[in-house]
Length: 187
Image 1 (spheres, rainbow, N blue to C red):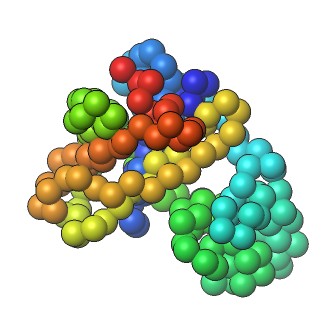
Image 2: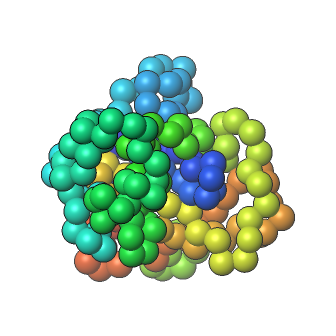
């Protein structure tokens, strides 16, 4: 996210939404405080952003559904009407966010370590309450604003299941990987 800003974690699924600013790294929730106690304004989503990669549905295609609904739409209705989130559930955090749920918890990167020639381990710490213990195979969702587009990726936790103070992911740099390449450029 060369133009990016943050780190957030999803309470429901212990998923991380991460936006970074190259230097220094700023952490927070939209318009909340950063490590440097400065307000951060994060880029809005664009109508052309892909909301659901499985169904190739853009954000702008489903936004009208929220405007024409005469009742509060629930998640099942939203998925049923839009088709987004009906395959792998990877976009469910974004759908919940669109439905007005406050699902993110602020975090900060407390360390980045080289795991191998091609992989780095990123450790995130909650800026609020401790995490719930993880389950084996659990993943986190990392979202970044890269070159003017919101990108979203899932990573398996490499944190011990009982750890509640931080979360870690280890990311291998992929030759054609837009997201992994961007992450590896963070020092």
